[in-house]
Image (cartoon, rainbow, N blue to C red):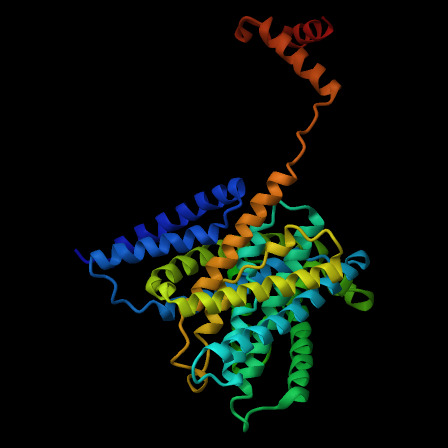
Length: 441
Protein backbone atom coordinates (compact mmCIF):
# COMPACT_ATOMS: atom_id res chain seq x y z
CA UNK A 1 0.00 0.00 0.00
CA UNK A 2 1.34 3.44 -0.92
CA UNK A 3 1.88 5.30 2.36
CA UNK A 4 1.37 8.72 0.75
CA UNK A 5 -1.89 7.91 -1.05
CA UNK A 6 -4.52 10.67 -1.13
CA UNK A 7 -6.70 9.17 1.59
CA UNK A 8 -3.74 8.40 3.84
CA UNK A 9 -2.58 12.03 3.60
CA UNK A 10 -6.10 13.28 4.42
CA UNK A 11 -6.33 10.90 7.40
CA UNK A 12 -2.86 11.92 8.60
CA UNK A 13 -3.52 15.68 8.38
CA UNK A 14 -6.94 15.33 10.03
CA UNK A 15 -5.56 13.29 12.95
CA UNK A 16 -2.68 15.76 13.34
CA UNK A 17 -5.06 18.73 13.62
CA UNK A 18 -7.27 16.85 16.11
CA UNK A 19 -4.22 15.95 18.21
CA UNK A 20 -3.02 19.56 18.05
CA UNK A 21 -6.37 20.71 19.45
CA UNK A 22 -5.97 18.18 22.30
CA UNK A 23 -2.39 19.37 22.85
CA UNK A 24 -3.67 22.94 23.25
CA UNK A 25 -6.01 21.74 26.01
CA UNK A 26 -3.16 19.90 27.72
CA UNK A 27 -0.93 22.98 27.37
CA UNK A 28 -3.47 25.17 29.20
CA UNK A 29 -3.62 22.70 32.10
CA UNK A 30 0.08 21.86 32.35
CA UNK A 31 1.85 24.89 30.75
CA UNK A 32 3.83 22.49 28.54
CA UNK A 33 3.96 24.30 25.15
CA UNK A 34 1.76 22.63 22.54
CA UNK A 35 4.57 23.25 20.03
CA UNK A 36 6.88 20.96 22.00
CA UNK A 37 4.26 18.19 21.83
CA UNK A 38 3.87 18.76 18.08
CA UNK A 39 7.64 18.41 17.54
CA UNK A 40 7.63 15.16 19.55
CA UNK A 41 4.68 13.94 17.44
CA UNK A 42 6.74 14.73 14.32
CA UNK A 43 9.72 12.74 15.67
CA UNK A 44 7.41 9.75 16.32
CA UNK A 45 6.01 10.04 12.78
CA UNK A 46 9.60 10.14 11.46
CA UNK A 47 10.22 6.63 12.82
CA UNK A 48 6.83 5.40 11.58
CA UNK A 49 7.69 6.65 8.07
CA UNK A 50 11.09 4.95 8.23
CA UNK A 51 9.40 1.68 9.18
CA UNK A 52 7.15 1.89 6.09
CA UNK A 53 9.86 3.16 3.76
CA UNK A 54 8.49 6.68 3.43
CA UNK A 55 11.54 8.53 4.76
CA UNK A 56 12.91 9.51 1.34
CA UNK A 57 10.44 12.42 0.88
CA UNK A 58 11.97 15.92 0.80
CA UNK A 59 9.81 17.92 3.21
CA UNK A 60 11.84 21.14 3.02
CA UNK A 61 9.81 22.92 0.25
CA UNK A 62 6.61 22.23 2.20
CA UNK A 63 8.27 23.36 5.43
CA UNK A 64 9.41 26.62 3.82
CA UNK A 65 5.97 27.50 2.42
CA UNK A 66 4.20 26.61 5.68
CA UNK A 67 6.75 28.67 7.59
CA UNK A 68 6.18 31.78 5.47
CA UNK A 69 2.37 31.53 5.57
CA UNK A 70 2.47 30.70 9.28
CA UNK A 71 4.69 33.70 9.97
CA UNK A 72 2.31 36.03 8.10
CA UNK A 73 -0.75 34.66 9.91
CA UNK A 74 0.90 34.80 13.34
CA UNK A 75 2.08 38.41 12.91
CA UNK A 76 -1.34 39.42 11.55
CA UNK A 77 -3.05 37.66 14.45
CA UNK A 78 -0.81 39.50 16.93
CA UNK A 79 -1.32 42.89 15.19
CA UNK A 80 -5.10 42.49 15.37
CA UNK A 81 -4.76 42.19 19.15
CA UNK A 82 -2.75 45.40 19.61
CA UNK A 83 -4.56 48.55 20.69
CA UNK A 84 -2.74 51.81 20.03
CA UNK A 85 -3.78 54.04 22.92
CA UNK A 86 -1.95 56.76 24.82
CA UNK A 87 -1.66 54.59 27.94
CA UNK A 88 -0.18 51.76 25.81
CA UNK A 89 2.67 53.91 24.46
CA UNK A 90 5.12 53.24 27.29
CA UNK A 91 4.58 49.42 27.34
CA UNK A 92 5.03 49.35 23.55
CA UNK A 93 8.26 51.39 23.69
CA UNK A 94 9.64 49.24 26.54
CA UNK A 95 8.81 46.06 24.61
CA UNK A 96 10.43 47.47 21.47
CA UNK A 97 13.59 48.43 23.38
CA UNK A 98 13.87 45.03 25.08
CA UNK A 99 13.26 43.20 21.78
CA UNK A 100 15.80 45.31 19.84
CA UNK A 101 18.60 45.39 22.44
CA UNK A 102 18.04 41.73 23.31
CA UNK A 103 18.19 40.72 19.64
CA UNK A 104 21.41 42.62 18.89
CA UNK A 105 23.17 41.64 22.14
CA UNK A 106 22.16 37.95 21.89
CA UNK A 107 23.22 37.82 18.24
CA UNK A 108 26.61 39.38 19.01
CA UNK A 109 27.40 37.02 21.91
CA UNK A 110 26.16 33.96 19.98
CA UNK A 111 28.31 35.03 16.99
CA UNK A 112 31.38 35.30 19.22
CA UNK A 113 30.70 31.80 20.62
CA UNK A 114 30.24 30.30 17.14
CA UNK A 115 33.32 32.07 15.76
CA UNK A 116 35.43 30.68 18.60
CA UNK A 117 34.12 27.09 18.58
CA UNK A 118 33.18 26.33 14.96
CA UNK A 119 36.06 25.60 12.59
CA UNK A 120 36.54 27.88 9.55
CA UNK A 121 33.67 30.22 10.49
CA UNK A 122 34.14 33.90 9.68
CA UNK A 123 32.57 36.61 11.83
CA UNK A 124 30.21 37.52 8.97
CA UNK A 125 28.92 33.94 8.73
CA UNK A 126 28.78 33.72 12.54
CA UNK A 127 26.40 36.72 12.63
CA UNK A 128 24.18 35.05 10.03
CA UNK A 129 24.05 31.78 11.97
CA UNK A 130 23.55 33.60 15.28
CA UNK A 131 20.63 35.77 14.16
CA UNK A 132 18.01 32.97 13.86
CA UNK A 133 19.10 31.66 17.28
CA UNK A 134 18.41 35.09 18.83
CA UNK A 135 14.83 35.65 17.64
CA UNK A 136 11.91 35.00 19.97
CA UNK A 137 9.17 32.76 18.60
CA UNK A 138 5.79 34.48 18.60
CA UNK A 139 4.38 31.18 17.25
CA UNK A 140 5.15 29.60 20.64
CA UNK A 141 4.79 32.61 22.93
CA UNK A 142 1.42 34.03 21.87
CA UNK A 143 -0.61 30.82 22.44
CA UNK A 144 1.30 30.07 25.66
CA UNK A 145 0.80 33.33 27.62
CA UNK A 146 -3.01 33.47 27.57
CA UNK A 147 -3.13 32.54 31.28
CA UNK A 148 -0.91 35.44 32.41
CA UNK A 149 -2.13 38.84 33.62
CA UNK A 150 -3.24 41.28 30.92
CA UNK A 151 -0.15 43.49 31.30
CA UNK A 152 2.30 40.56 31.07
CA UNK A 153 0.40 39.00 28.18
CA UNK A 154 0.50 42.29 26.22
CA UNK A 155 4.23 42.64 26.93
CA UNK A 156 4.95 39.20 25.45
CA UNK A 157 2.76 39.85 22.39
CA UNK A 158 4.52 43.17 21.71
CA UNK A 159 8.02 41.82 22.42
CA UNK A 160 7.74 38.60 20.38
CA UNK A 161 6.15 40.41 17.42
CA UNK A 162 8.86 43.09 17.40
CA UNK A 163 11.54 40.40 17.78
CA UNK A 164 10.19 38.53 14.74
CA UNK A 165 10.13 41.62 12.55
CA UNK A 166 13.44 43.12 13.72
CA UNK A 167 15.15 39.71 13.51
CA UNK A 168 14.05 39.15 9.92
CA UNK A 169 15.14 42.68 8.99
CA UNK A 170 18.56 42.10 10.60
CA UNK A 171 18.96 38.74 8.85
CA UNK A 172 18.24 40.12 5.39
CA UNK A 173 20.38 43.19 6.08
CA UNK A 174 23.29 40.80 6.85
CA UNK A 175 22.62 38.66 3.75
CA UNK A 176 22.63 41.83 1.64
CA UNK A 177 26.13 42.65 2.88
CA UNK A 178 27.44 39.34 1.48
CA UNK A 179 27.26 40.86 -1.99
CA UNK A 180 29.01 44.27 -2.02
CA UNK A 181 27.49 45.12 -5.43
CA UNK A 182 23.95 44.91 -4.00
CA UNK A 183 24.71 46.21 -0.51
CA UNK A 184 23.03 49.59 -0.03
CA UNK A 185 24.55 50.17 3.43
CA UNK A 186 22.86 51.46 6.58
CA UNK A 187 21.43 54.53 4.79
CA UNK A 188 19.86 52.39 2.11
CA UNK A 189 18.48 50.06 4.78
CA UNK A 190 16.64 52.87 6.58
CA UNK A 191 15.45 54.32 3.26
CA UNK A 192 14.06 50.87 2.44
CA UNK A 193 12.33 50.80 5.85
CA UNK A 194 10.68 54.21 5.34
CA UNK A 195 9.57 53.21 1.83
CA UNK A 196 8.07 49.99 3.22
CA UNK A 197 6.11 51.90 5.89
CA UNK A 198 4.72 54.38 3.32
CA UNK A 199 3.69 51.56 0.94
CA UNK A 200 2.18 49.66 3.89
CA UNK A 201 0.01 52.59 4.97
CA UNK A 202 -1.21 53.29 1.42
CA UNK A 203 -1.97 49.59 0.84
CA UNK A 204 -3.77 49.28 4.20
CA UNK A 205 -6.07 52.25 3.55
CA UNK A 206 -6.78 51.04 0.01
CA UNK A 207 -7.60 47.48 1.12
CA UNK A 208 -10.02 48.62 3.85
CA UNK A 209 -11.80 51.15 1.61
CA UNK A 210 -12.13 48.66 -1.27
CA UNK A 211 -13.14 45.62 0.78
CA UNK A 212 -15.85 47.46 2.72
CA UNK A 213 -17.61 48.01 -0.63
CA UNK A 214 -17.47 44.35 -1.70
CA UNK A 215 -20.91 42.82 -1.13
CA UNK A 216 -19.95 39.20 -1.70
CA UNK A 217 -19.94 36.98 1.40
CA UNK A 218 -16.82 35.17 0.14
CA UNK A 219 -14.13 37.82 0.53
CA UNK A 220 -11.96 37.01 3.57
CA UNK A 221 -9.73 34.51 1.78
CA UNK A 222 -9.54 37.05 -1.04
CA UNK A 223 -8.24 39.54 1.53
CA UNK A 224 -5.69 37.01 2.82
CA UNK A 225 -4.63 36.28 -0.79
CA UNK A 226 -4.03 40.02 -1.31
CA UNK A 227 -1.89 40.18 1.84
CA UNK A 228 0.13 37.12 0.78
CA UNK A 229 0.62 38.70 -2.65
CA UNK A 230 1.81 41.98 -1.11
CA UNK A 231 4.22 40.07 1.14
CA UNK A 232 5.67 38.05 -1.75
CA UNK A 233 5.97 41.10 -4.03
CA UNK A 234 7.61 43.03 -1.20
CA UNK A 235 10.19 40.26 -0.84
CA UNK A 236 10.87 40.37 -4.57
CA UNK A 237 11.45 44.14 -4.26
CA UNK A 238 13.72 43.57 -1.20
CA UNK A 239 11.32 45.40 1.13
CA UNK A 240 10.70 44.52 4.80
CA UNK A 241 7.50 42.70 3.87
CA UNK A 242 6.48 41.69 7.38
CA UNK A 243 5.97 45.37 8.21
CA UNK A 244 3.23 45.46 5.54
CA UNK A 245 1.33 42.75 7.41
CA UNK A 246 1.93 44.37 10.82
CA UNK A 247 0.79 47.83 9.72
CA UNK A 248 -2.33 46.48 7.99
CA UNK A 249 -3.28 44.64 11.19
CA UNK A 250 -2.68 47.77 13.27
CA UNK A 251 -4.72 49.99 10.90
CA UNK A 252 -7.79 47.73 10.82
CA UNK A 253 -7.60 47.08 14.58
CA UNK A 254 -7.35 50.81 15.33
CA UNK A 255 -9.60 52.31 12.66
CA UNK A 256 -10.71 55.32 14.72
CA UNK A 257 -7.09 56.36 15.19
CA UNK A 258 -6.10 56.05 11.51
CA UNK A 259 -9.34 57.37 9.99
CA UNK A 260 -9.60 60.89 11.38
CA UNK A 261 -10.63 64.23 9.90
CA UNK A 262 -11.58 64.08 6.22
CA UNK A 263 -10.76 60.36 6.00
CA UNK A 264 -13.55 59.49 8.45
CA UNK A 265 -16.26 60.18 5.87
CA UNK A 266 -14.91 57.40 3.62
CA UNK A 267 -15.04 54.73 6.34
CA UNK A 268 -18.14 52.61 6.83
CA UNK A 269 -17.49 51.74 10.48
CA UNK A 270 -20.00 48.87 10.73
CA UNK A 271 -18.74 47.10 7.58
CA UNK A 272 -15.10 47.66 8.54
CA UNK A 273 -15.73 46.25 12.04
CA UNK A 274 -17.44 43.23 10.48
CA UNK A 275 -14.37 42.62 8.30
CA UNK A 276 -12.13 42.99 11.36
CA UNK A 277 -14.05 40.46 13.49
CA UNK A 278 -14.28 37.87 10.70
CA UNK A 279 -10.60 38.37 9.80
CA UNK A 280 -9.68 37.89 13.46
CA UNK A 281 -11.42 34.51 13.54
CA UNK A 282 -10.12 33.21 10.22
CA UNK A 283 -6.56 34.40 10.97
CA UNK A 284 -6.50 32.61 14.32
CA UNK A 285 -7.89 29.41 12.75
CA UNK A 286 -5.44 29.52 9.82
CA UNK A 287 -2.47 30.27 12.11
CA UNK A 288 -3.44 27.28 14.27
CA UNK A 289 -3.54 24.87 11.31
CA UNK A 290 -0.35 26.16 9.65
CA UNK A 291 1.55 26.22 12.95
CA UNK A 292 0.44 22.64 13.63
CA UNK A 293 1.61 21.30 10.27
CA UNK A 294 4.87 23.28 10.36
CA UNK A 295 6.10 21.95 13.70
CA UNK A 296 5.02 18.37 12.98
CA UNK A 297 6.92 18.42 9.67
CA UNK A 298 9.88 20.03 11.43
CA UNK A 299 9.81 17.13 13.90
CA UNK A 300 9.84 14.69 10.98
CA UNK A 301 13.00 16.33 9.56
CA UNK A 302 14.93 16.39 12.87
CA UNK A 303 18.13 14.31 13.09
CA UNK A 304 18.25 13.29 16.76
CA UNK A 305 21.76 11.84 16.50
CA UNK A 306 23.14 15.38 16.12
CA UNK A 307 22.26 16.04 19.79
CA UNK A 308 24.79 13.46 20.99
CA UNK A 309 27.84 15.57 20.07
CA UNK A 310 29.71 17.11 23.03
CA UNK A 311 30.62 20.09 20.86
CA UNK A 312 26.94 20.70 20.04
CA UNK A 313 26.08 20.50 23.75
CA UNK A 314 28.86 22.95 24.73
CA UNK A 315 27.96 25.54 22.06
CA UNK A 316 24.23 25.25 22.81
CA UNK A 317 24.67 25.59 26.59
CA UNK A 318 26.86 28.68 26.19
CA UNK A 319 24.26 30.26 23.87
CA UNK A 320 21.44 29.42 26.32
CA UNK A 321 23.36 30.96 29.24
CA UNK A 322 23.99 34.13 27.21
CA UNK A 323 20.31 34.38 26.19
CA UNK A 324 19.02 34.34 29.77
CA UNK A 325 21.85 36.46 31.21
CA UNK A 326 21.14 39.23 28.67
CA UNK A 327 17.39 38.85 29.20
CA UNK A 328 17.75 39.10 32.99
CA UNK A 329 19.71 42.36 32.71
CA UNK A 330 17.27 43.93 30.25
CA UNK A 331 14.14 42.97 32.18
CA UNK A 332 15.57 44.28 35.46
CA UNK A 333 16.54 47.53 33.73
CA UNK A 334 13.19 48.15 32.00
CA UNK A 335 10.64 46.30 34.14
CA UNK A 336 12.12 46.35 37.66
CA UNK A 337 11.84 43.39 40.03
CA UNK A 338 8.64 41.83 38.63
CA UNK A 339 10.32 39.79 35.88
CA UNK A 340 8.89 36.33 36.51
CA UNK A 341 7.88 34.34 34.50
CA UNK A 342 8.89 36.78 31.72
CA UNK A 343 12.56 35.89 32.24
CA UNK A 344 11.95 32.27 31.23
CA UNK A 345 9.62 33.00 28.29
CA UNK A 346 12.17 33.28 25.47
CA UNK A 347 11.60 30.26 23.19
CA UNK A 348 13.02 29.90 19.69
CA UNK A 349 10.89 28.26 16.99
CA UNK A 350 9.35 28.93 13.60
CA UNK A 351 11.45 31.96 12.60
CA UNK A 352 14.62 30.25 13.80
CA UNK A 353 14.01 27.24 11.56
CA UNK A 354 12.84 29.33 8.60
CA UNK A 355 15.85 31.68 8.60
CA UNK A 356 18.35 28.90 9.25
CA UNK A 357 17.31 27.24 5.99
CA UNK A 358 17.48 30.64 4.24
CA UNK A 359 21.20 31.16 4.93
CA UNK A 360 22.86 31.75 1.51
CA UNK A 361 25.19 29.07 0.14
CA UNK A 362 28.18 31.44 0.17
CA UNK A 363 27.83 31.93 3.95
CA UNK A 364 27.33 28.25 4.88
CA UNK A 365 29.97 26.54 6.99
CA UNK A 366 30.42 22.77 6.87
CA UNK A 367 31.63 22.63 10.46
CA UNK A 368 28.35 23.95 11.88
CA UNK A 369 26.19 21.20 13.42
CA UNK A 370 22.41 21.62 12.88
CA UNK A 371 22.00 19.98 16.29
CA UNK A 372 22.75 23.39 17.84
CA UNK A 373 19.54 24.69 16.29
CA UNK A 374 17.49 21.80 17.68
CA UNK A 375 19.17 21.95 21.10
CA UNK A 376 18.42 25.68 21.51
CA UNK A 377 14.79 25.30 20.35
CA UNK A 378 14.08 22.40 22.71
CA UNK A 379 16.13 23.93 25.54
CA UNK A 380 14.34 27.30 25.48
CA UNK A 381 10.95 25.56 25.23
CA UNK A 382 11.70 23.35 28.27
CA UNK A 383 12.94 26.35 30.27
CA UNK A 384 9.74 28.22 29.39
CA UNK A 385 7.69 25.20 30.47
CA UNK A 386 9.49 25.05 33.81
CA UNK A 387 9.08 28.81 34.31
CA UNK A 388 5.35 28.76 33.57
CA UNK A 389 4.75 25.77 35.88
CA UNK A 390 6.80 27.45 38.63
CA UNK A 391 4.80 30.67 38.25
CA UNK A 392 1.50 28.75 38.38
CA UNK A 393 2.51 27.05 41.63
CA UNK A 394 3.77 30.25 43.26
CA UNK A 395 0.83 32.39 42.08
CA UNK A 396 -2.28 30.20 42.05
CA UNK A 397 -5.42 31.89 40.82
CA UNK A 398 -7.74 32.74 43.76
CA UNK A 399 -10.97 30.76 43.97
CA UNK A 400 -13.85 33.04 43.06
CA UNK A 401 -16.17 33.71 46.03
CA UNK A 402 -19.88 33.25 45.50
CA UNK A 403 -22.04 36.31 46.08
CA UNK A 404 -24.61 35.83 48.89
CA UNK A 405 -27.47 37.01 46.67
CA UNK A 406 -26.44 34.51 43.96
CA UNK A 407 -26.38 31.74 46.61
CA UNK A 408 -29.90 32.64 47.72
CA UNK A 409 -31.09 32.52 44.08
CA UNK A 410 -29.56 29.04 43.65
CA UNK A 411 -31.26 27.80 46.86
CA UNK A 412 -34.64 29.19 45.76
CA UNK A 413 -34.28 27.50 42.34
CA UNK A 414 -33.42 24.16 43.98
CA UNK A 415 -36.44 24.53 46.31
CA UNK A 416 -38.71 25.15 43.33
CA UNK A 417 -37.41 22.11 41.42
CA UNK A 418 -37.61 19.81 44.46
CA UNK A 419 -41.19 20.83 45.25
CA UNK A 420 -42.47 20.47 41.69
CA UNK A 421 -43.09 16.73 41.25
CA UNK A 422 -43.99 16.82 37.61
CA UNK A 423 -43.83 19.94 35.47
CA UNK A 424 -46.14 18.34 32.91
CA UNK A 425 -48.94 18.38 35.51
CA UNK A 426 -48.88 22.13 35.73
CA UNK A 427 -51.61 23.73 33.65
CA UNK A 428 -50.05 26.21 31.21
CA UNK A 429 -52.55 28.84 32.30
CA UNK A 430 -51.54 28.35 35.95
CA UNK A 431 -47.79 28.14 35.40
CA UNK A 432 -47.07 31.76 36.23
CA UNK A 433 -49.19 31.56 39.39
CA UNK A 434 -47.51 28.35 40.55
CA UNK A 435 -44.08 29.85 39.98
CA UNK A 436 -44.96 33.01 41.92
CA UNK A 437 -46.31 31.01 44.84
CA UNK A 438 -43.21 28.82 45.05
CA UNK A 439 -40.85 31.81 44.82
CA UNK A 440 -42.85 33.63 47.55
CA UNK A 441 -42.46 30.65 49.84
